[in-house]
Image (tube, rainbow over all chains, first blue to last red):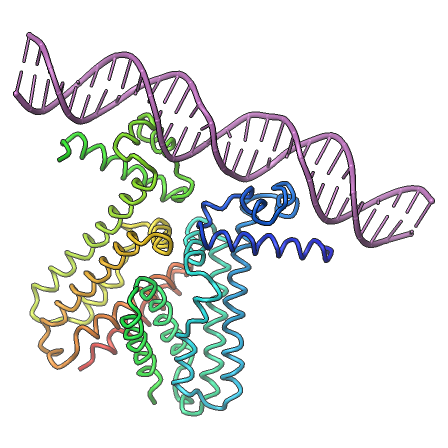
Length: 194
Length: 194
DNA sequence: ATCTTTATTGAATGGTCATTCAATATTAAA
DNA sequence: TTTAATATTGAATGACCATTCAATAAAGAT
């Protein structure tokens, strides 16, 4: 068991890492830089995270937890209703909250590590399984969808959401952005049609 | 204008960079390592690519060109027919060729750079515009789709393809992989229905 | 109050990094 | 053949890197 001080410090360090990674990228964020940013010697960071790999692995957990944390209130909210209002629902799925709480650059940087690290891959996979499961649960609540294969539906909806986030991150123009969001929302609506 | 030697050397260097990045990741592939791998001093590499950023930028162009190169024959083939056979079509879209010719790890690593580099973002955007445009052209050839909004369709199809590639890269089990591919292919088929 | 564990510091290490430079070799142009 | 441009080499640079270590300070346990 780690003490309170230890837990706080760890959080502080990971958060500082994340903040710097947002600006400079993970690959340009050294332990020395994190230390400078937080006003502590690098050796203290290594006291809590013995290697750089462990530090990165903790950053990834931090990010994935955040994503889940953004998602959970949406689920709660929708769970409170007894049917899945497609508009509220898709509005939430494509809302900016996702982007705001986890920086896209850091996110995709971490994601690219799954191809060389089995543990990281598993962590990402588990996140997505959880997201799909939660979505399925929401859809199951909706009486209008009773006859539908909700497991399948949640796969189909999420593949659009994921593709959309990827594609939308390249779009600069705000009008164009909204236009595309509308297209993808409609696409989800199509799937939800009885 | 660069000489033949110059052009060949540049290609050789970028290719060596790519090969090492596949194994160790871009961030762990130094100019010295590339030099060692190709049997040349690092200074020669810097003779052709004055800074590391320029080297990376050229790696990205190399990758994006490859993606376009995989895609082009598919288009040609489909252009030869006068209608879009949905099965051939989706088989091709989800074929393994994409993954084989451009390593996913390197690809997403490069992609993550769009968030801190406007020029890279533009390059990726242009690639995707081109892909969508080509797809639209194919769809336009199909008489069965004459009444459909093919520009919209190509957006909707690609968002599935992109989401699928993202999601599928986390799937390890081959059976599960095929299962999911089938789901996403069906999803595209749905869109193509008259 | 003493002992033990944890937290923190700062200096030092060897290694690797991107980049520079001057010298030499090769090729192309005149 | 002379000249100019390009290609290639290898050594050197200082900056930064992750990591180690020994010493001190603070907190917690007994």
